[in-house]
Image 1 (cartoon, one colour):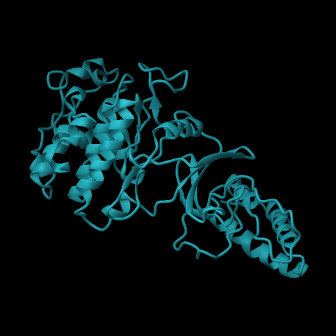
Image 2 (cartoon, one colour; image 1 turned 135 degrees about the vertical axis):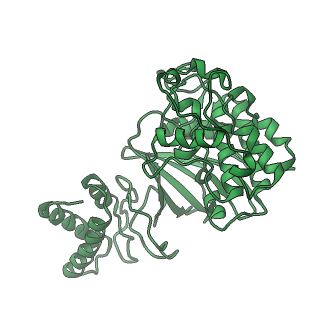
Image 3 (cartoon, one colour; image 1 turned 120 degrees about the vertical axis):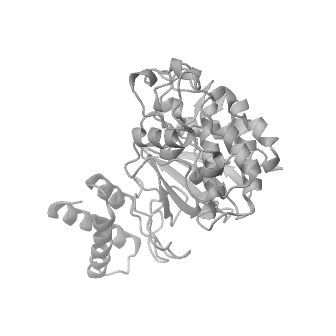
Length: 387
């Protein structure tokens, strides 16, 4: 990423002025020196010129004890830094604030949002701030906030939303902060707590589906954990579809098919089927269980994450389907447009050699071509693996 010298010069001046206003005792030379160091870091971490400008706009130094009162506490665009190798110390100033949340620390970044970690100034509890500005359907932060307000809660194992706020064009959702995701657990190898965690995720999906909502992005990173033992909470409803709250162009029989994440995408969407239902969540959830139990993804989308590579991986594993073995495919717009190599189905014991018979049986009933044969979330809750 290259930023012009003139743009960097202007940015350094803006940063220096902010630092000087926050500390009336600092010399102009020291303020400029600090600004140069901060600007250099922004230029190094920015992925684009817009990203660079957002970092400069978001920077707000912590006011010193003897600085003037009444300094603004809100910032402009979110600071979209790449995840640091080490998280800043709890008391280390970051210069980033959103409304009453000061000293916000960059936590992670998604396709249309950035997550910051901060502390509620009143309760002193850690919170996560999901900052979104521009998004493209099916992403919708406002819909996500509406859904979480009626679905979230400890008893439903769905992330609770604490508050929302709009600051300078950015929509901010505030949640309780949870230190782990299922990804962190999986990186350590198989955990004995997986059945308990997955039971809680199944409870969340059961409640979600009963309320006419399809999550559409079930993956390990969207399963938050309070500890390695749980409890677990389903999060990120940014691309969810709801029967009573969806985009006007995305009716029940014409949903978008660009859903899910790489190896968790269900096969019906890969062939253009837009009338899908909650079964897409079940397929993805089954892939998550298989990966967590076996230590490797069930299917591979290749380095580029392409649909064709994922289709090949699914066919090589489950066998090439036909209209006889997958009659629903007769309704898929793109299924009959291609000729496929015929691959035999692999035994599930071969696909998941490190998985118990109970877990294997559950996955087999979730990751199946026929949507009608996939277990529902309520059926999953009754399975012996989760007992």
